[in-house]
Image (tube, rainbow, N blue to C red; front, side, top):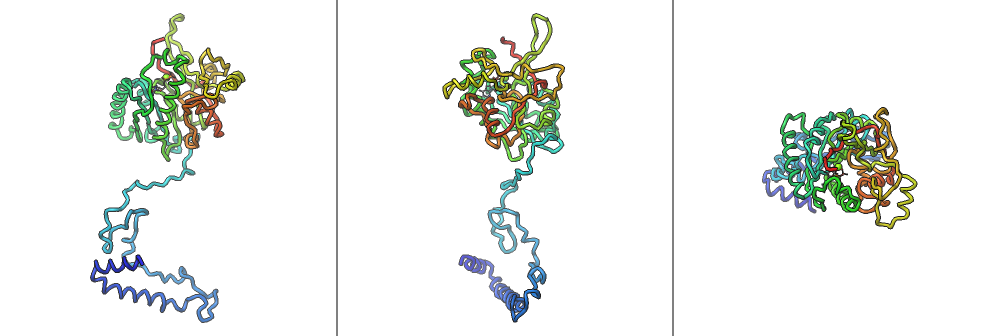
Length: 396
Ligand SMILES: Nc1nc2c(ncn2[C@@H]2O[C@H](COP(=O)(O)OP(=O)(O)O)[C@@H](O)[C@H]2O)c(=O)[nH]1
Ligand SMILES: [Mg+2]
């Protein structure tokens, strides 16, 4: 019914069609009932072996304007032509509907060669020039790097945001081949803590609340930026100021679901009167019997945060496994990771591994994330001899 109405509507609008329409109808009737009669299956005792199928006879009627009928794959309405010239404006703009075959999205040991996109995510309370310089000296092709930042809605966040925007603008308006694919800057929606000094923010009492807030910030950042083209996510804290130039190539080469670099810190050793390095991030650890025992005695909503003498877990901490003479490629199986410099295959996050802001097996934030990845059957590793450096804040 609807199509009949449509035909009459068209006839009214294009009067000359009142002549053409009966003619076209006649041609169709001739085609279907007269010309094709002899090839009707079973007609006058013809056997099926002599029957010619449509594609064999090629009696198809082609419109002379066939190319005009090529439609885009999707359009809200049909493309304009001499007959439908009132339907122009509703073609779906390019990119409105996109197809991604996740079977073709890989995270491999040859990431750069296979043009795999890396999303570098940084929660940023303070903008350090050295962080940005370090980021810019990475050699992984920028056309394969997306950046994502989340800045707290605090006074220090305002300052960081202004500096970050300036730095981003400089790079993204510079040479085309030096630009990152995309940069996303988010303002934090969840609770944030204004700048605490290194000592204060590491006090055990504030850890639970602070880490829970950080977990929300990381989740907000992750879920707003991960895309169907993301192969890897590199969590890189805003206070990581030194890393090997081939960081991404080196880490992806291990092709591990979750892989943490060893976060150290440069400092001046007053006793020896020389610059030296020391372990910084104690969130990269392997589980211990004592750790499990402690957890089993805890109330449901209690958490263990690593690196506090108040909570001696005797867990093997990757920070202490650094061997200056060892191979930088040495791997160590881990159960907890920090967010300082941790590479994640995007599928681990896509499977649902996130940063719990609630006690998950008595763990939260990045340590809870490692546990969640493991529960999803993804392995977690660290590189004890592969160092990146945390800024020193000169306040301890
Ligand atoms: N968005 C956001 N980022 C934060 C907040 N607090 C700290 N950060 C960032 O989160 C990362 C880790 O925090 P940090 O204080 O350095 O932790 P620590 O290195 O373990 O002492 C750094 O990149 C900080 O800049 C916050 O409240 N909101
Ligand atoms: Mg830090």
